[in-house]
Image (tube, rainbow, N blue to C red):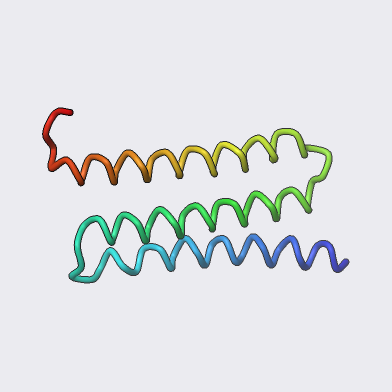
Length: 93
């Protein structure tokens, strides 16, 4: 019972992070700030949802742990690529 409540709580928290990440897109800040806010909130939200699913269906743990690892690696590498591209000003390296 408590496990189900915690699982649903993590899933709802993930959805809240997803919507919270879209709020900076409406502001007047730089594009890089908007991308950073969106990617961090999206990563945290997606990881929270996958953790909630892990508690809900523990029999699928290998696949869900792989999803967590892929989310962490993909979003970290994408952040570094975006930062590198913005620091070079679009010039070829």
